[in-house]
Image 1 (spheres, rainbow, N blue to C red):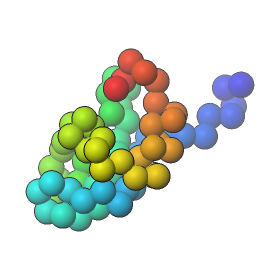
Image 2 (cartoon, rainbow, N blue to C red; image 1 turned 180 degrees about the horizontal axis):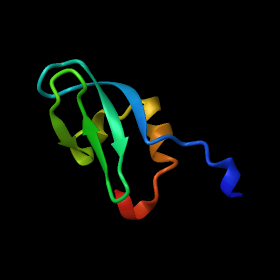
Image 3 (cartoon, rainbow, N blue to C red; image 1 turned 120 degrees about the horizontal axis):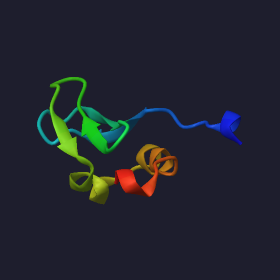
Length: 69
């Protein structure tokens, strides 16, 4: 069971950053999920990007515990 963990701590998405327009990365910390742009270093709330969810973000969220959302 524990050895089958396949989800990483981040996922590159095709969703554009609200600040610079470059693709943004979904990040998972111990207590929350947030969006981080590696180009402009801006950090955003996951809820701000849900309407634009792509396949990469949806698959990433499958591995996130509910109490981190």
